[in-house]
Figure 1 (cartoon, rainbow, N blue to C red):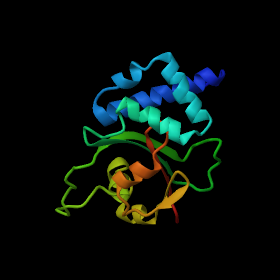
Figure 2: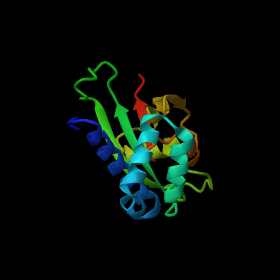
Figure 3: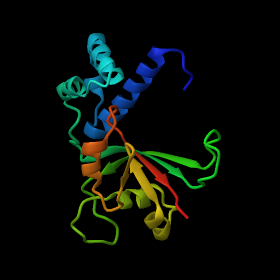
Length: 171
């Protein structure tokens, strides 16, 4: 993303929140129809870390509930710990929506979708052993693979309404 000022960041942010709104509810019209004044107010909330006002503005849009039982997730997998971060050579990126109420393949668990389930579905090249050894963080918090995706989304999603999952492969 070439940086040309605050407008670039604001545009990127609203593009991301439109994508998340579409995943959550099947439409981004609530974000698209925001007035410029509303967008500016929300952007100020984000920049100034005014959580209360930000979530009040987001709630007005009625886009935070997963009406389609889908959640917007972005995963970053780093396989090689010693690769230079400047090259991003060993970082894989996946941006997906995940069904919350899906029947897990070959299982009749009756349980919720876990972070481990998401890793195995989103990155099919990971073996079960690799998945077990993965270190997963969200919002700077290390998370257990058995954690509920829905719970993690509720508590650790970003202001653009995406849940960012960072995976580091541990030897």
